[in-house]
Image (cartoon, rainbow, N blue to C red; front, top):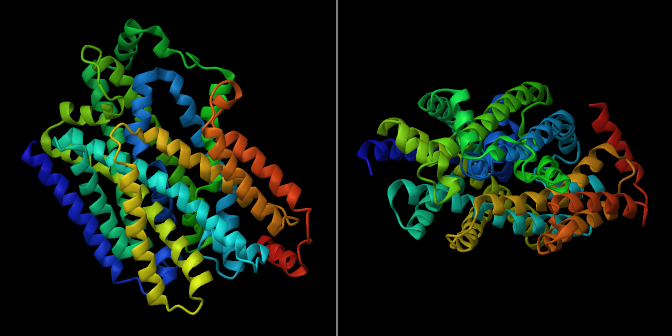
Length: 484
């Protein structure tokens, strides 16, 4: 391990912890801890949402998929870009306004309970439970990515690498909450962006340009150049369907809720989509170039292709910077997931059910303790070194997209929706994803987010006609949110 790379890496980690400590001093109540007091600027919100969205799969999973399968894997990037744009265009502004009107809601379960006047607490509890279940798997995927990074770069054992990465991430999330997460995500997003631009450009230059790279890949196997290789209609639909997940990801849509003004949304959308599209191209090209570059010495683990480029093509100081970018991708997602999960425990279980009169200081500390507990469970899940970053992410992504996506969309755009519809949609969507993922063969090879999303939408609409209609108060609030 080169000492220059290690020093660069350590400086980065110390900087992230310093942000956590600074944010600790600005965090006084639960709203500050889980939503930053609704004072994020558009650019910070955009890069924070992008960084927390993309996670380790952008620098490990996606390049690895491209390296292993060639151009046929680009469909997932197309689906994500379309889904992210639609989310910013149609959900962001409306959700920012509606959550403020709906009793200043600060979490997704909080919004759903206030939106549908659910005094039974069932909607809040079920939503929070779904968040905890799927975020535990999602967090675990990030910890696996961190372990792969430390193991490959520093020669550590998988278990040691897992614990070191987890301790750093838990520390600043524990201390600073949403402000620490958002500001670290902002800087991490910039770092990821630069890495995904620099690495493929240098690798292309090393290979003699784009034409030479394509020719070499074609010489290895022409199927790598065909976007339809090995693809069935169901396979393409499954990859494009990743875009459906955006509408239900709590760690992304809470960024919409935290923007200081809806007037910031257009700027945030421009910054966020520019960042995302260029980053996706960088990840795709990195994996594709790797097919030609490593042809004589194939990688054992395809998800290390980006790491191998940083080790082989750059001097140790730059390599340390690029490895920090990979850790940025991992940290920026895990911290957001831990924060949303801890807010579900503090706001949606502890305050709503156990101690309605709990003080703000008490709730912040409940949230911090929850960060520790959830992280420990995720570490245990990540202890299997055979775990795949992309597989773990795809399961959790489908869980949130199938359980919450249609419910969030309909709650913002359909006045007739009721508490029964929302509750049925969340349950049906989550259960469908869990069951479908255990089955295989024929129709069951379709990515589980598709049946989860469709059945959640149907259940939400059907059960909204079962029981009481929306109250005049709910309809008036809906109209007020639209008027804003």
